[in-house]
Structures are given as C-alpha cells and as structure tokens.
Length: 488
Image (cartoon, rainbow, N blue to C red; front, side, top):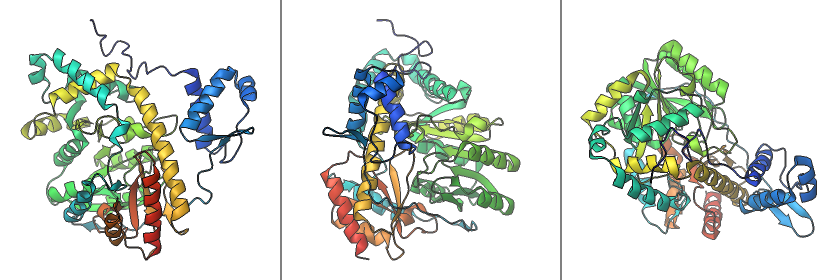
C-alpha cells in the first residue's frame, strides 16, 4: 500500500494537524476562559440552550463539550442546577517570591546527593512525586510499537548507515515542519538527532566551553544540568529565576558584564523545576542581551509541547538570526520516554556538534528514530498531545487543591502554565532533605530543593510531580506529607 510522503499532507503533520471536532474546539474555548479566570471557580456555565443560541452551535455540540469538560475535571454537573466551574481549592496557596541576588561562581558537586534521591524511585510501590517523568500510561506505547514494526520492515539497509550521524531523514523533516509552524525556518542540515536531549545538551556545551569555564545556569536549575557541569569540570554562575517571568535579566546582564561567561544554559519555557515561562518580549530581550555580548545560548526546550494554553510558547530560537542559539528538544517527555530520541538545532555550531557526536556515540537507535518518524506521519501526534495536555492540567489542579487542603497555610507553590511539576516553598524551619527521608520511609518520594542548586540552596523547598493520574493513594500521600511538614 502506498504511503503518503511526510511533506505531502500527512495525517498528523503540523501543516495539517488532526482535525478537531466542533465540540472539542468549543470545549477548548471554554477551558481557556476558565484558565484565564474569565469563568471563575464556582461560576455557573450558560445553559445548553443559551450557549447554543449565543455561540451558534447545536445543543448536541454544547452537551458533548460540557461532558468532555466534566470528564477532564474542569466543570461539574449539579442536579437540576446546571454546570459549574469546579472549585478545587477553597484556600489557594500563594506563589513563591524568589528574590534576586548577586550571582556568584561555584564549583559543582551534587551528583552523590542526586543519585541518592534517584535511587528512591526504583520501588514501584512508592508514590512517585519525586519522578522526573509523567506516567507511562499517558503515552501511546502500543501505537508506537505498531509504528516500530512498520518502520523496521520498510527500513532500507542503505538508510541504516547513511542516517547514522545526522539522524533519520524523515524524522528530521517532521521536526523541521514543527519548527516551521512555530515560526522558525530551519535548514534541515542544522538538525542533528541525539540520544535524548541530554546528549544534545552535552554536545552543545562541549562545543563552546573548556574545563574551568563559567556557564550561566538557572537557580534553581534541573539537577542534570549541575551533573553535566560537574562532569565537564565547568563552574556555575547561578542566575535567579522568577516563578512566572523566568530568568532575571538584570542579574544576567550584571553577570555578563563582570564575568567571562562562555555560555548560558536556560529553559525559556516551562522551566524545571519552577515551571516558569518567559514572555515573548522577555525572550526577545534575552536574545538581544546575549547577542550584544556574543555569548551562545543552549536552549533546553524539552517541555515545549506540554503547554496548557491555546498557543505554544515561542522559543528564543525564533528570534535568532546569527546562529547564536542551540535549541534542544526531545520526545521523552511528551511521547516516548524509553526511546531516547532527542535533537538539536545547532545554529553556527551544527557541523561541530555533528563531528563531536561522530566521535562519541555515533548514532541513536535507528529503529527508534524510524518508529517516531512513522508515528509523527501517521499516528495522530497532535491528537495525543491534546489529550496529554488536558490530563496534566487536570492533575495539576488536583495536586494544587490537595496541597491547599493538607499543607500549612504559609506554604507557597508555583502555578505553571504547563509541564508536570510544582515547586513548593515550605516554612523556613522545614529541611527538605530530612523531609525527603521521612517521606520515603512512608512510601512517598519527592525531589528536595538542594539538588537543584550548585550551592545547595532552597533547603526549605521541594519539587513534586503531578504527572501521574490522581487517585486515592495520591491524596493520602499529600495528607501525610502535610503532617510531616507540620511536624518540623
């Protein structure tokens, strides 16, 4: 049977995304009103008849949209009263306020601490609030397996060798198409497929630094960032991150003026662990600052597809006209965690990245690349992403509501617009390393704040993962965590 080419109206190509039904579009429009606060918690939705007349849709469309929103946990039906926006948190916790401070250089030595935390996640009976991944139940693994079987059967012997360094040509073409939709016209030769995003980030850093160099990173930062710097014998310059606005540009500008920083490694959208996303103008200003100093940006954008709003956030890469941004992505967080397929759009360093990769790992799994390329063309990727985003948004609301019920009122928590992490700032007397040990003894994992800092800061903070379906054990775990926090 003839298969359509990936550049010719593939069913889930970003140029022709999976067609949404009218009730799904209507449900998403209502969800956006809830998300932005236009429809407040507890507020009654228009009656089916009124909504049908007002929005020019059939009563059946309204019914189906309301049922869909109810199944997502965003609204609820009350007998003989209608539909209401769900009131999840009667007493919402405030957001953290991370104060800026002068950046300092520091050696990195966190691996032993990180490995002790990661070791806690091996027990399948542990509540996985400390995990770095969402639940595998949220991914279309069976459909991916069918894509793997089909792709391997059609894989030519020549392609296995020819695509080893740059990566599968169909996969790179599909990735380039998704860049194009986000406003980035990317030459195919700039893309290199990697063993997950972490290899891509490692390669980028090795291209622009040498042992002893300074690298600007976020504070708090994803612990893998710290481990990479430690392995490469690089020194960290921690730049404060605001929970909503992202990187503190004033602090970064001061650091660039004072220190010989050789590269920046930032997450501009849905930053891990805070979930912060920089606004478009903030990203433009960041690029202008780096352009002025000619300091490269390694943009870690692995959560790019997990936004909750109606529009995907633009990467800093979209403002790059000089090849100064090395943009790294992955399918591990949104589609196929075990396949270890990532990529980098390397800018002016693309050829250097390609050669360095040839000298190290040579190639990611060829069958895994082919499977994902096949899935992107024919598997319904955008449909899967919509379902995944709705699940994560509902689970975030459940964890926030549970935290408001069980944690001390002085606790602060982020409210990210995507991803699957919440950052909790507990009262000053709470030691999150001790909290980690006490919680683990009760079968609950979490990620304590000090593993996200080269200087072991954020001792009264912790990251919790809401990426698993919310259930009774999740609720009980939050209640128990609240009791342990109260005991400090």
